Image 1: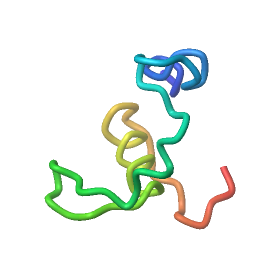
Image 2 (image 1 turned 90 degrees about the horizontal axis):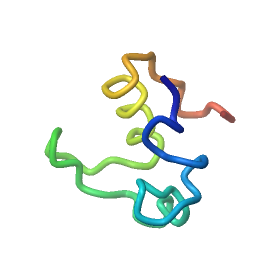
Image 3 (image 1 turned 180 degrees about the vertical axis):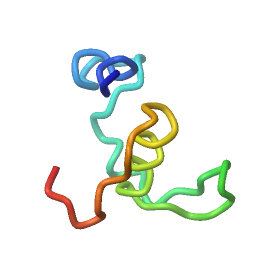
Image 4 (image 1 turned 120 degrees about the horizontal axis):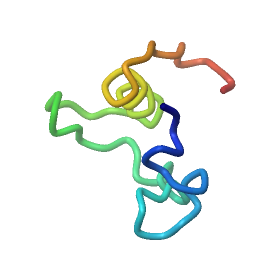
Length: 62
């Protein structure tokens, strides 16, 4: 599984979990944790929860 399983065409299509402009919405309240998270935390949450992977360091260039 990778990001394109949910974010079709690398998140560039409208109305299918698009990623364009997503960065501008953060920081944002995360309803699961009940705290404000940044974009790095959101990506890591997706990696760990949706993809059963490991979190990347917040200073990662990836």
